[in-house]
Amino acid sequence: KNEVEQSPQNLTAQEGEFITINCSYSVGISALHWLQQHPGGGIVSLFMLSSGKKKHGRLIATINIQEKHSSLHITASHPRDSAVYICAVTYTGTASKLTFGTGTRLQVTL
Amino acid sequence: NAGVMQNPRHLVRRRGQEARLRCSPMKGHSHVYWYRQLPEEGLKFMVYLQKENIIDESGMPKERFSAEFPKEGPSILRIQQVVRGDSAAYFCASSPLGRMDTGELFFGEGSRLTVL
Image (tube, rainbow over all chains, first blue to last red; front, side, top):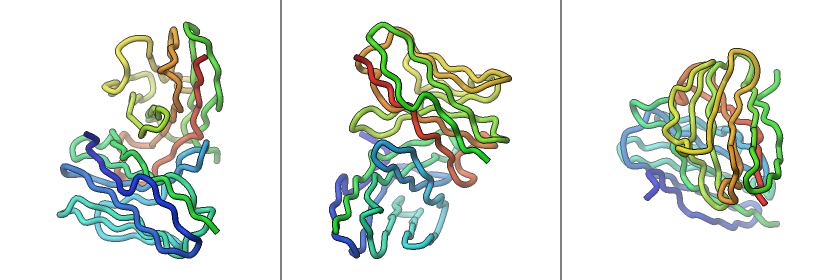
């Protein structure tokens, strides 16, 4: 059982829709990252969170430390947002090691 | 200011051959991490190196896999006697500190190994 769970695994949306991707983890963390990977491409860091909320353009990331849960929101989605979104955490006491979720594959259609 | 550079981007090997994957960290970064992404699976930690030292190799398969990060030159992930199950994308990341919880993560574009 993966220690970092993401949902949904696959998501199809129409352009303009509001999208939410969820991530939950099992024990205390020092940080949570949201990453983006385009098909056949590299991995890009979107956000690092240890508390609260961050916003960058149309992307918003939130984290609830007590609930051990984070969400990534995309407002006004666009086909270029189509990618795999990956949640990764560093557990408390093991800050050099990332544990990854299995990713959410997002397809945004016209 | 180049990012994390990996080469080759694509590598094809026949079963039994050796694969060498290279990673040059960002300028000023002395910590390198290797991850493997098997087809349709998530990324998994393999090894963490600092210059001339292996810090954590708990994710490395016990046989055929080795990694180094010499004083000069890139970090190298070496896979001997490759098998079809080694086919995967191998990603490298680097950081200025030995921590992944201080800010943005920097990954390379990955090296995609195909074993025939």
